[in-house]
Length: 255
Image (cartoon, rainbow, N blue to C red; front, side, top):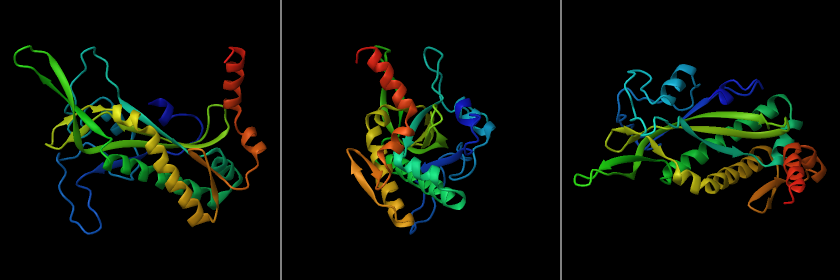
């Protein structure tokens, strides 16, 4: 988790994205959490290191009770990184912006990331697995089960590993969910991996609309992605050192 919490790049602090089927709509009354107190951070609040470490270890941050069972090999995934990135031209625009304008763009990106994650939750892409042992064969099998509540620590970064401007977020989904019956268990990330492109598309749709409505910036479709109208190709190439490095290695290897 150190890459997200201490990356040495003065990136934004983590913020909790917490979603529940009990989350109230504008016309509804809040329902109680299936666990009291809830193990997750309040949606939209800052991520504390202690809270994050407890959830990563599979224990309740308040009661310290275990939330998941250990895996058979003793290893456990602490979470799943859902990466959501803005198109390169949006990063170029953000690099050109200063002060309040840049902060507004960052805030818009954050909202679009959260909306994409919430849409993924509502689509049933965040599920837990439950182990069941056959009473005769004693073999253990697993099946997917909807979760009532899940949480991710979301970290926004503005640079790539090659130090290029690259506006993106890591939504680190904690590997624990509250099932419909109120019990807790580890998550199954296969749906997230299978529909990763769908989550990215949801973000891009939100981002394109936000740029147009809040900044008057027009975009144009570019394959499955979009780009900002008017950003020169040479600027995009100048901000793509990492991609150039990968392509150079590929050419050397004969690909």
